[in-house]
Amino acid sequence: MRSTIDTEALTRVALDAAEEAAILIMRGFRSRPATRTKGHEADLVTEFDEAAEQLVRARLAERSSLPVVGEEGGGDLTDAPTWVIDPIDGTTNFAHGHPCFAVSIGLMVAGLPEAGAVVAPALQTRWHGTRAGAFRNGKAIRVSDRANLGQSLLATGFAPNQEPKDASHNLRAFAELLPVARGIRRDGAASLDLCHTADGTFDAYWERGLHAWDVAGGAAIALGAGATITDLAGGPPDYRIGYLAVSNGRIHDALLAHLR
Ligand code: IPD
Image (cartoon, rainbow, N blue to C red; front, side, top):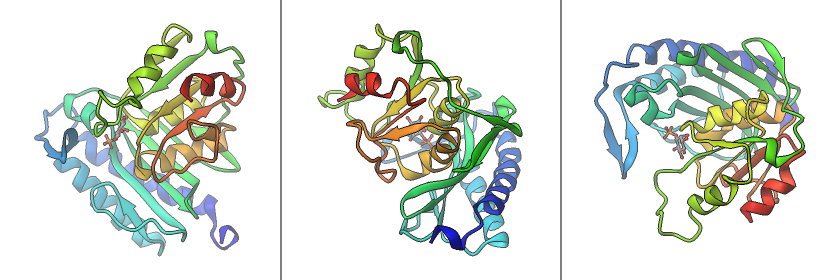
C-alpha cells in the first residue's frame, strides 16, 4: 500500500494546509477565545479549532482523495492511507494565550505514521517529514545523541481524561523520573513534544492515553529524525491509543525501566 502513494508530495500538501490553518488560528491567539468542554472539564474546544479543521479538510480534499480523521469532525481510521489532523494540538494553551500549540497533520497507513507536518505559529516554527527524513524550518533534523538519562531533558503530558487516583496515572512515572533526569517539561501539546524530541531539544518523551490525531504528524516526523518509538513496555506502539515512549534510542531502555 505504501508504494501507491507519494509521501513526499503529500507532505507538501499537509504542510501547505497546516501553514494556512496556522494563520487562521493566530487570529484567535491571546484573544481570550470562548471555550466549550468536550466530555471532560479539561478537554477544551474553541471556534478556532472547528474553523481550522474545516479549512484543513477542504485544502486536503482539493489536492488528494484520501479519507480524513479529525479531532473535531471525527472519521474512521482504517488501514487505508488516511489524513489524521489535530487543528489545534494544545487547545488549553491556545485558549489561555500560552504559545505552545500547533496545527498537526499526519498521514497514517495501516495504523502507522508515514508523513507529517506540524506548524506552531506562535513559536514561528514548523516541522515536516517522512520516514526518509525530517526538517525544522526547512533544515534537516536528527534526534539527540545523549546516552545518559541523568543528563537528559524529558517531556511528558497528562491526558485530560485520566483519573489521578488511578494507579496507572502518569503522576507516578513523573515522580519517579523527576529526580533521575536533568529535567522534565510538560508543555501541553503532544505534537510539539514529539517534534522537540525529533529535533533533539528533548531526549525523550512519554505519555499515556493520547489520540491518533495528537501523535500522527509528530510521530512521523520523529521517526524520520531517527527516533525510537515503542509502547510503555517496549513493544510495538499502537498509535490509535497513544501510550508512547519516544526517544533518541540511546536512553530508551533506561527510560522504559522507569515506565514499566
Ligand atoms: C492534548 C495535548 C496535550 C495532551 C493531551 C491532548 P488537544 O491535545 O496534546 O499535550 O496531554 O492528551 O489531548 O486536546 O489540545 O488537541
